[in-house]
Amino acid sequence: MAILTCKGLSKRFGGTQALDQVDITIEPGRIVGLLGPNGSGKTTLIKLANGLLTPSEGEIRICGLVPGKESHACVSYLPERTAIPTWMSVTQLLDFYQDFYADFRRDAAEEMLAHLNIPPKQRIKQMSKGTREKVQLIMVMSRSAKLYLLDEPIGGVDPATRDYILSTIIGNYNPDAAVVISTHLIADVEKVLDDVVFINQGRIMLQASVDQIREEKGMSVDALFREVFKC
Amino acid sequence: MKWQFSNDAPIYAQLIAQIKVGIVSGAFPPGERLPSVRDLATEAGVNPNTMQRALTELERDGLVYSQRTAGRFVTEDQTMIDAAKRGLAEGHIQMFLAAMRRLGYGKEDILNLLRQENEKEETTHGDFDM
Image 1 (cartoon, rainbow over the protein chains, first blue to last red):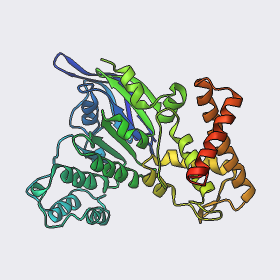
Image 2 (spheres, each protein chain N blue to C red):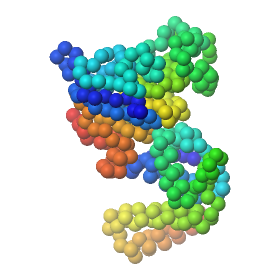
Image 3 (cartoon, rainbow over the protein chains, first blue to last red):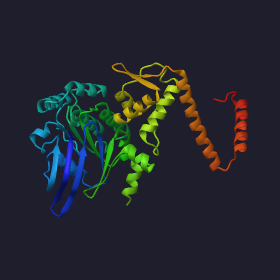
């Protein structure tokens, strides 16, 4: 069964059409890039998938379910902005995730944190931005979810941290789950993706696999994106 | 092994070429077990399905083989490895020739230039490989 399906999905904010008749199907085992310029509707789509917003029209299903309590249990979400409580220590955060999510693999999280030499007693607010991003991603990827929604996971961090984040996503690959990564930093994520979805002004412009684009167009997804979204 | 990718070719095709170089150069010796798809994908920084696809194609060509539970291994067939080496060399030569033709060199000029370059290298380094 598909992990995520959208049919005729639309979202309006007052007079603004944030998403317009979006049709998407994402199958298990795929890592999908949701690529579009700022304000194209990427975050709106992600927020609809985790139930933070409700559709104006059309439908969205997670493993066949309407976003809600049941679907939340199988969706792991990395918001655009750091959302973990900054007063907590690493240990408190691990406890917090363990209490909240039945599918949290604490041992996996502890192993990744130890690998980064992050002391368990350190508080989130004592960490640099890059470290916070890494810790948050570790928490999100340590759940055995069906769908990982990563909103701009590599925005605003240095290239070495980017590499770490991408290799963490690859290292936690699960053939039964799907990963959606929204970003405009395409050159960095391209090699990690199976498929890409180009989105602009709330509409899907293109859906294809990375190697299909490279094979048919003889150019990278990054180059194609620059061509399609030329200002 | 160092993995590098260009922007103009499919990633799986580049993976195939680089794993072949690894086999030919001995980084992946004959008969040796290859790392798992996930480890290779993490090391190369690529999508695991793309790595899987590259390995499946190498398997179809016979350069690697899988054993049901033990994993994937490099072939022990030296003839096959030599053929792969030859294929890679021909690819490099064709690219070189195409580049030289674009510069306006004919066949004889190219051979002469190669000979001169070889002599130069022999006097400075005494080795073509340097």
